[in-house]
Length: 285
Image (cartoon, rainbow, N blue to C red):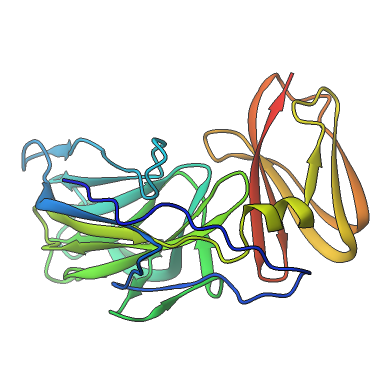
């Protein structure tokens, strides 16, 4: 059962300054979104032999009817003898992560042929630890939450206990930070317990005053306008699959982007400057 604690609270700040958006792992306020998954949902592969995947478990973090993330477990009884848990961010979402290494058996022999493999791993947050713009944020097709190698000479248990994932969601005007609480993570299952995200202290009206993206819909050109001079801002455009099609550093108050070669469709424009990250859907006709 999903339980919605509150709806969006809009707070308007004057000027560019303001506190950065953040949330504490495991915490939520009266003005935040919160869901208690009751009873807890267990994600288990269909069968524990050969290569099997569980069904994707969708997460709508902020209750807008749009899937933000999906979770999945995978069991592989082949040469790698692995079980992993993965999260799939939608194109408008990111997850906090880091890069780690682990030895893996690449030729199928027992404890032989080991190489050092790099993994993108979802970052673990302790209860009450701050989740904000700092650190590394991942936007792509998939990221590993847990990776286990069954062969005893290659232990690669990155995460195997109750933990919080750090997430952030972009809609047309807001950047929402949140967390997902997972438990009972082992070689056979992953349990979803609860999740939450906050509201944006900058507010929808503030973002509209700070950044203008026009025309929308567009045909050949997108204009990005800010009321103040921007030194080395960053803009990227991706499709609905999260593939980045365009990226560029921006300077000044008004910048023009040529999208005449883009096929018609919906694209995600991401604008970053200092600790602010804004995202907006753009329709190319």
